[in-house]
Length: 473
Image (cartoon, rainbow, N blue to C red; front, side, top):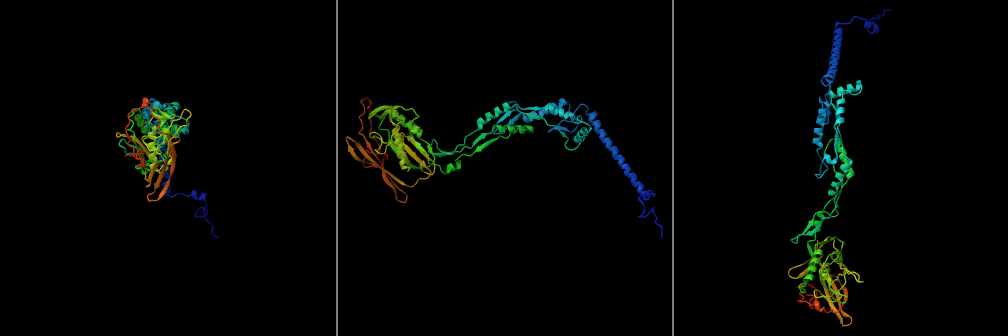
């Protein structure tokens, strides 16, 4: 058998193969690798050495290269220079702090302060702090990537910032307000726009202030809650009361008493431009009672007397009839003690503030339409008091009010029956019935000291028996 060569070939041992003479090409490759490794080691040593030289010699008493605080490069600065640079930077960013809606405060007003000294000390410690590994980490962090960043911490004074924010909240906090119709001086109906409600959250705003200061930002989000009104501007415009639903006029020039006429102007002016939402009730007493009036003649204690507020019943009676012609629901009405010169019996509606054991008497009606209604009442220079009810859409109903004397007795008085007939736009009678049966006393004589000149009433009411509408000529 042929003896195997144990020092060569595929079956040779590793030891023997390593000991074999190497080719010249292999020796040259190994030499090149060793030389490159030596060069790399030398370069690394020079790099590290250069860093040490840079940190220990070039920046001996200054902040190391690559250290910054936000946008401020602190490289090569002394601590004093760095503090000045940070202060200027922060003053520019936080000189004015905006809390929204153009509400601007100075840093002093909010007690905002920046701890620049602590940030400078941290910046100065880079490359000097900790052990060898920390320093090496700082060295490499400064030269590669984005460098080493330090934070200048900003704080605010709780009491000062809260006081400023609460003051802002008082100015901005608003209750929601529904859009509503109004009347211009020219008599045109317009819609007053809705107002969105808002409520500033003071604690939430202070939290946002703290977050903004962390980034040295003077823009602070205002924490607030918004509340939409129940009736938007668009909805109000769609249902604006611009159409006349009912109207009534009475004559006031028959009595030239200036006190009475002044009361008419004041009372009708208080009622004028009142807006009622669907389902809302109007009360004449609620509007008229708080006002101050001139003395004028009234029915009182079975006779005629001078009282403050004489003439108010003409205001309530005129409006009462306008509400009837507008097709609204009358919820409270009381007749007078005696017949009146300005309106037909049964068409009157008294108001009495109460007193001397007599309960108050009111005139009330309810808005039974689907939209807002607008009440107008005013006196004109021609001697008429006019009441109007405006709405969004007339019903198309034809309404006739009538009143007829049915009995007259010296002992029981004069009895009148008031009726109402409603015919819809198709010609069908939908209501035809008696509203009231009222008994009036004969007019008491006017005391001698109260007599004054009067003119014949111009209202086509009960003075003219042939006219049952109660409308003025």
